Length: 638
Image (tube, rainbow, N blue to C red; front, side, top):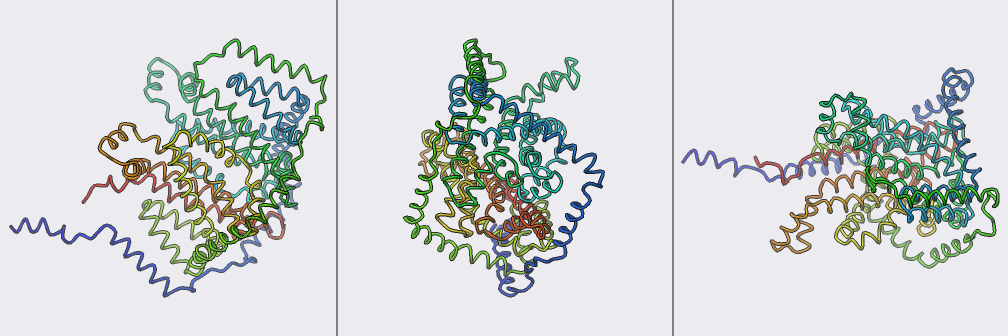
């Protein structure tokens, strides 16, 4: 009897699982109420660390022509990239619109058949119809240079990382910084090291486009069947032969995805690269932003989207066809005839797109924006004001008035609970570094905007992702809209947001949500679709309603995909921090913009960019760790 009591006693004394987190939460609330307003770190624009970085820039600029680093290394890189751009730009200009249309149409036909070929012809013609032929050609040349160099560097490193866990661990933090670092933050150093123009723009685009090339290639190589590699070795193949005869052919479809994503990332960077005088469509978009005219921006944004769609279809079609598929003679003949026709028309037709064939819709678009501004003003003002009063202002007041050490301990506790000790210590280190950099107050303001934007993004992404996973028709309808939202430069939809909401934090949140929703929707949709069909059938046969099937089966089994979606939503929202600084978001984004535009505040902008990276790494590690931790349903009871 006593043994029974001894065995049963622990079960009566066991606390509920929620008791410890609830107790910690109560302690944090009490500490906040007691220490509120103390231990804060207000922003100081003249902090010594900001001035030191600005002085370093001035010293580098003054000794540019004396340093061997510039004379024998950086200048040669700039000249090489510039020569490569001139080569591509000259070749495309020599083709003219007839030759470029025919050659791209022929290549697209070879890649994916007559539908992709006609899409390429229509897409290239769209550049001329919109009156943006020369800008589009310049953008195409810049993207070609950036993608070529990104793949030449990224694919070999990706192969190396895919075959070596040590290399993969070494390059992952570098890739994280490259992806999270606001693009404005490294435009200034690039302009300092490489001047302004096409070379600096191509290098900036490479920094943004290389990470997916490395990551996806590494994933492709690491997922090659070990059995195939072992079989190759047992047959006497050398490591080099195994790599080129077995590993790379088997990884070819995923490496094609790496090429595709590198192109997409390069296209999304061309607008921002114009801020350091990179040629192309970015100039038209920036000009429209400076004049507050959507009619100038929108056609250039449409041209970027069309270019992205054409290149996307051209690069993904061969992967879908399979490694062993052969081209039909009819397709070869048709593609050759299309390319030959375009080349034959070069001496006959003018190389520049005829002005009489252009369509000017600037006035109509501006009129539509003015109508929307006047018609929807009461609604948009109400939404903006209520969001600020009920959500943004209280959250910002909470974060900026709390002692810095209390915020750090809270993040430590949450990260430990969600993702484990390693992620918790990383998050704590990032917050301490932000405090030491002197950007604490602005980092908390930025976290306010990011938190609300991520929350809205996840709600919309879950709703649309679930709807797409459960309805193929809905998925087909929203796919082109998601493609446009993901490839449209952020600057393009900033002006409609400005027209509707004015220069406020809500405008930045609106832009961030549009930018971050597409990958979240796709990840949620893929995660739910990946739930095994037999599990779904078993749940339905057991009498589950559609709602029960979703909440009890599909969403729990898609947990990893949903957590990855949350991670990507955070990363994508942080990537919009600087753009948000242009439209009233303030905080770190505004600091980066000011630092880039004014030499005297370069240190402030650069340090703010570093603080944004630290904020992103902190949130990224927490959500990545949550993805790796087991589900509560899988934990063994003690």
